Length: 121
Ligand SMILES: Nc1ncnc2c1ncn2[C@@H]1O[C@H](COP(=O)(O)OP(=O)(O)OP(=O)(O)O)[C@@H](O)[C@H]1O
Ligand SMILES: [Mg+2]
Image: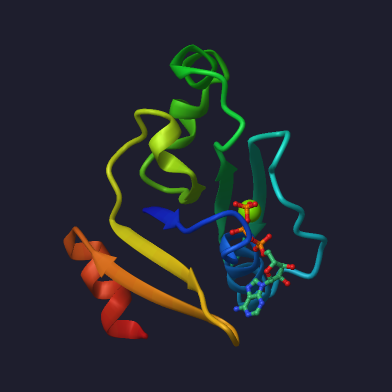
């Protein structure tokens, strides 16, 4: 499934992915894919791909890096700054907003699998 993470710089997108991985039992280091653009983890019985496309140069870089192949219908994809490329459509979009204390998260489902996820929360 594909999850877009929207929110300003520092809104907590990477922290949210770290929290998801921790909840799945992943105990290794979760670093921001700021420069690598993609970090992949195996947790909870599947591969979780964490993209940060903020520094993506252009559409060609997205295509030549082979990122599209990762969208195989099995992996779970979290994407920061998805508007930087033409990425597959989202099942779920999470909007993060910085508040004085903590963050506000608004979750919207766009497919039936997204709706199933929201119902589980
Ligand atoms: N829910 C939260 N409550 C309080 N502080 C938070 C929360 N989530 C993240 N932070 C803090 O905000 C800072 C930035 O978080 P993070 O790196 O996850 O942002 P980001 O949205 O991924 O930014 P970028 O777009 O630069 O990658 C971190 O120092 C983190 O401690
Ligand atoms: Mg980040």
